[in-house]
Length: 109
Length: 112
Image 1 (cartoon, rainbow over the protein chains, first blue to last red):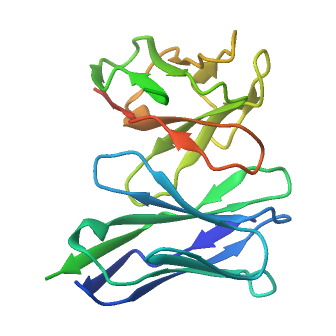
Image 2 (cartoon, helix red, strand yellow):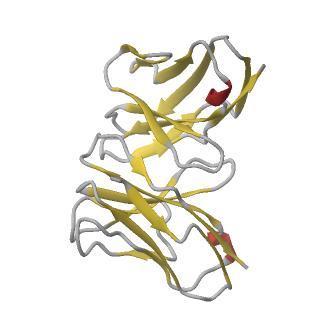
């Protein structure tokens, strides 16, 4: 079956770096998405990886290893506003998104 | 302001009642989607539409129906609501198959 795994919750300190991991199993693969969702709000797009390697976008970077079925989202210089849930989603061969349950990131001062 | 508008924002509904959740986008995106989000679970696809005039079933379509008469509108109907349909419903759109989704602000539905 198709499956996405990511940690339920993580805690980090303001100003630090945190890495949120995601492993996936899909029928075929057409890319890996990361979304940010603040409590009570809609998910918003952060990044998309379809080739192996690291994509950097400001304080946020996303990494993909297709052979390992593995991705991570790296957040640097954490700010209190980064407290949110981070959703990992893999796109299968039919271009359907398989979603993880999300990782709730708690930032402490 | 370009984007996706969902209505209502929240609703309390008696079991057995019929309800339509509205979704309108002004970005001229071809594809539209309805998801439900429940605590501890990932977003689950209810129905989708790749282009106006076509619809398809997602992972959890039972008890729901959709229509796509034009590019902009994609309403979701619960024919006879049940308590298990209590959830937050998100409408989303995208310009193409592997493009990022743009989400509406959601409808929080409680079925009593």
